Image (cartoon, rainbow, N blue to C red; front, side, top):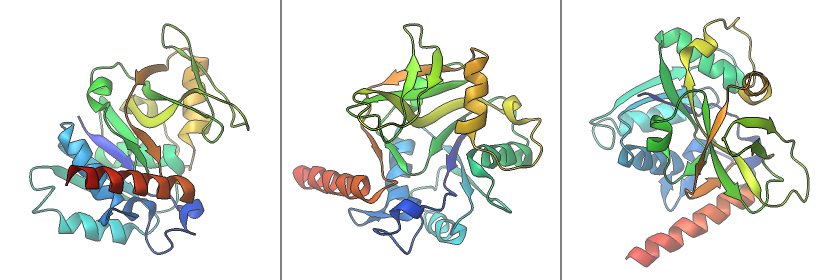
Length: 235
């Protein structure tokens, strides 16, 4: 199954800490974050990737070319650069159209670290989102679902939200959700997911995986420290 990777965002919030490269290329323990991601995804069995690019696309393309005979030598890798910024949903819809995708695929955020879970989503029924529990949902908004794992709401971000479940940035979707795309930019989180929730079609898969979102400087630097400490512990 293909893994589509959302890697075209502008990374505005992270630029104070990482001004010169896109979020996916932010250095972590001396390596681009995307390389650590690819190592992790390949270790989980993924062999077919589609990187969805826009901002600073050439930086990511150059990195991928440098890994063709190394890390990616046994993988299928496709790069798609949007003609204009299309938002998360538009980027996926563009990929479905350009690649003539059929059936299901996995989708993940390039700036979200998720230690495992791909196999779980690989056996789920689309449409499904991965959920992780965090001590404070205020930065992300809360993912609300019941004992049957049917998603009933995406709660807005609010201070002091406390512990809860969030969208972990990994989902399984079917191509037919995007076949009627009109070419406009749109946010999957703001448009597609609420439609699926209203129709009673979106489910959550609960994961206990290691999770980090490097989209803001504090969390990026925290992840860097944590990974460097872990690597030193293995030496």
